[in-house]
Image (tube, rainbow, N blue to C red; front, side, top):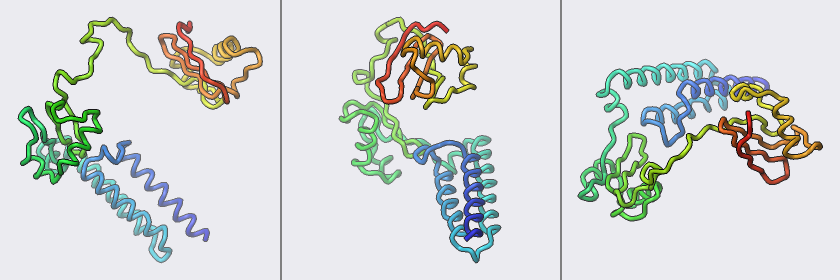
Length: 236
């Protein structure tokens, strides 16, 4: 039993290492060769874990080989657009101003239902709303709407707006995020005094579910078991 546990741990750590090297793409964002490698890795990992008669090395060597193969293919794709196109394919326009490109659809082996599903996924529900639709190499459908159906932006309305700042987590589930304090040039005393001031003297950091703050002074504070509160103009 101990042997099985150790083998499982070794394979798990190795597979985790492999996927860390491959990056943080989700399944729907992977190129075809990356998806193939992922499926093979999943299959290879189960063999030495389940079969005690199979040496662990017989699982480690193929996994490391796939890591090297992935690295080589990635580098080749970066060096040559032709190789990248050969390995991953190229984006294909399936809808243009004239309508649906039937030949392109057939070459991709997709149906009208698949096309409509992709369009709905982008927030459009009628063909007349779409100017272009492009099938990406990952299988995701990108949509360029017609001008009359494009979302209105602040630039279109000529509104003056302030830049957005990324909220920084200062307290999460009762724990002060020490590294994040440096991002805003604040310390624990600032956090404690702010919570005491806004919640009350009985408030404790360990009871804070989430406290975020951005550089423009917008704060979000929620105590465990209570409703959240927002504050603006917080002086940092």
